[in-house]
Length: 237
Image (cartoon, rainbow, N blue to C red):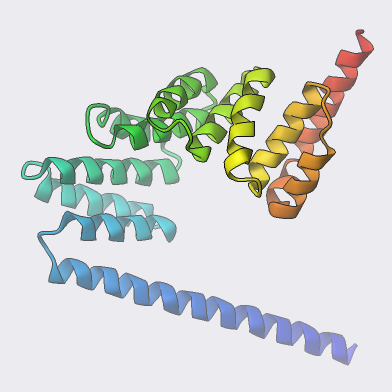
């Protein structure tokens, strides 16, 4: 019992130390990014970088205020700065779960040099809203610019899966796995597609468990639902 208590105490101390080290690194990075703005006040990228880091810290309100301030400073002077900062603001809203606001920002970039990135984020925003038809439209548009991009192909595969277009989804997920064979999410989703299409699926699930166990574990309810769907489908034959 004493040994168990000692092990628990050591474990807690280790977790606390790791948390303190992580916090220290975050504080150092934050300090550096703030200094970058002070030292380069006319460089919009310093504002973008700090905003992106604030999003990582889940400080969405501060990130929004910072990017809005930067837009006020640079939007009328520099076309590229306006596009980059608008994209950054869209990312703030997307990360905060305010998808209608993120869509508004990304839509405004459809004629800019960042349109390909904007279309990807529009697809992701509509995916998050469960509007899979629009997600497919924007993902296909993005793919027109980046045919071999595994992230775009994965996004397309996921959207088509959600719409029940499993054969088409398989093609895009296969493209993703060709570029990223260790992509756990893509392996898991391809396994589900294989189940529905009555293909061999063990290989995909083994890889999913190996490369992204968290996603694999979280996907067990989806897997159970698909198994029921496949059994019902087979029972009708």
